[in-house]
Every structure is written in structure tokens, then in C-alpha cells.
Length: 135
Image 1: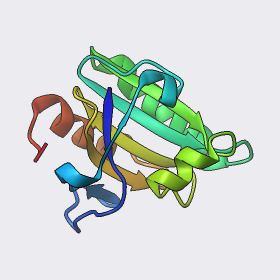
Image 2: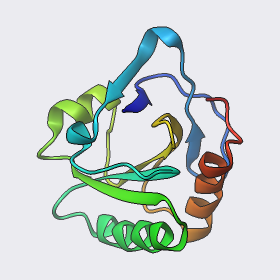
Image 3: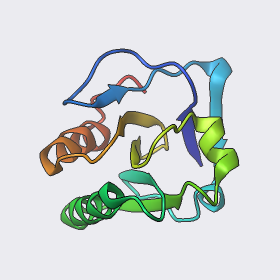
């Protein structure tokens, strides 16, 4: 199961554009691998919301896939935002690409909009893998 926080975030950031997710017991939404359309990683998951004609989405796909290959137990799951509008609305996705970094338990550790830099993805992923977050 993946645990996603759907609305409040703090202003904290690990790198430009990345926001820490804040979760509370009353606002947790649990998603299965079927909801995401892919299997989560054993240690962490990079979830990418994309759209068909989004040039930054293609570059983001390459970056996230490369990082996922570098780190054992990390998966990259891409979701077509246009095909999953209900999920997009529920999670407050307003532009593509949007990237969610999930820890092993499926909690959203970081969230970013726009094309991320490889170093920023690695830093955010490190927080999820190393357990250096609030979840």
C-alpha cells in the first residue's frame, strides 16, 4: 500500500522546487499498486505524473529512470495524468511533470513540479531511502 498526503505541505525544501509532505492521521489516502498502475519499489518509489505532449515529461522520464536504475530497490512509476484525472484531482496535481518521492511504506516524502535536476532527485530520494523524514 502507498500512503499519500493529499493537501497540506510545509515550505521546507531539500532542493529548489521540492516540498516536504506533511501528513496527519485524518487525511491519509492509501493507494494500492493497482491504483498507481505499477509496482512500488522495495526501498522507495519515484512517481511521475506526465501528459502526452509535455516535453519536460520526456526529460523527467529519462532522469527518473536513470536514478531508479542507480539505486537498488527503487522503482520509477509513470502515470498518464490525462488518463487518471480522478487521481490527479485527488492528489492536487496541477501541472506536468509532477514527481512524488515515496518511502518504502508509500508515504510521500517529497513533491516537485516541473523538470527536476538529477542531483535534486538523488537528494530527495536519499531522504526517503535513509529514513530521514517525518513519516
